[in-house]
Image 1 (cartoon, rainbow, N blue to C red):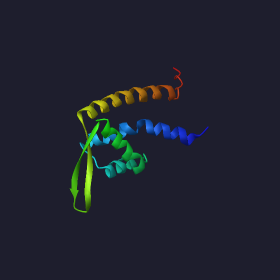
Image 2: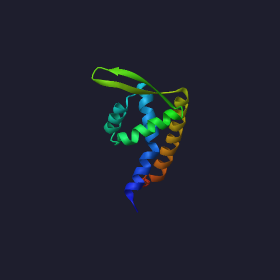
Image 3: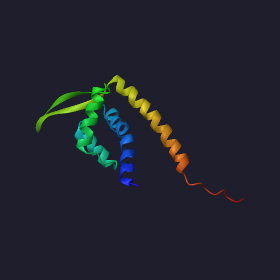
Image 4: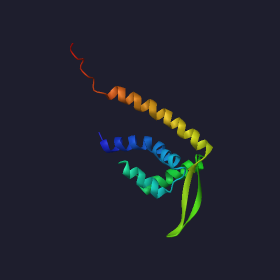
Length: 116
């Protein structure tokens, strides 16, 4: 069995929720900042994964973006959640909480009852 493939699929399953959470918390986010926050959380995210995902979410109406002039280079694209994106994020949060609770219950090591 290929553990790397399974690990990759597990990460992909929560990637959208993590990215949308970063954008929501900051009200807007530059892709480089998203990558840095993910890295600081111990989750590796490559540009080649992030940009197509942001583009797909934008095309689905979940994200919008605006350009901000930069003093040290070309303008930067900042993403923010649309109204639809806020609703989508909330639904993902509900799903995540249900999933995390269920997984915790199923994988928790049973404690031995204490003897009285």
